[in-house]
Image 1 (cartoon, rainbow, N blue to C red):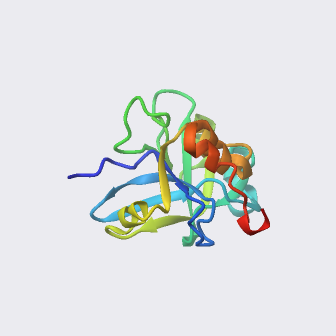
Image 2: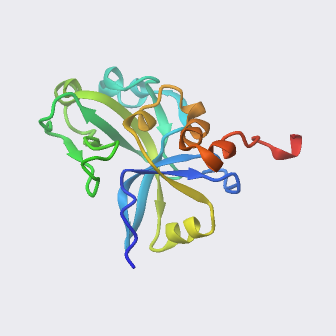
Length: 194
């Protein structure tokens, strides 16, 4: 049986996931989970490094907080950017995410070519977030982690990716699901102190 595409969804770390790279992480899936693996970015790990200090021309276009985000442990020396254009017409240098349903909460989001002229492309973007590195999984690895109970697979919204308060995102995403997941959102950071 084929697993549905995870592109455009969130992977929210369960309290059981204790890998320091992903503890209480919210990962936005960029590339389809398929035989070649999967790719996403952690959207709730802001760094104390302004975008303008790394990519001078893009700093003025970055969404608040206008800092680099630690996208994951892979390729940390490279930048990856997600954006939503201002207008319906796609600007040059922006590519929509593939395999995202038209009625998804993230339709209209895509990746940005950071080598494109910022003064032209940046003005066409309504929202922009820049990540250092990404989260990647090899063939079958992510499926196994989901089956083991390391991740909740949840619908995403544009507001999740461009959240102005990323430190509250993990609990906020779980809380809005209601039921048992809303209860999980109150799980203490260190249960031994409870």
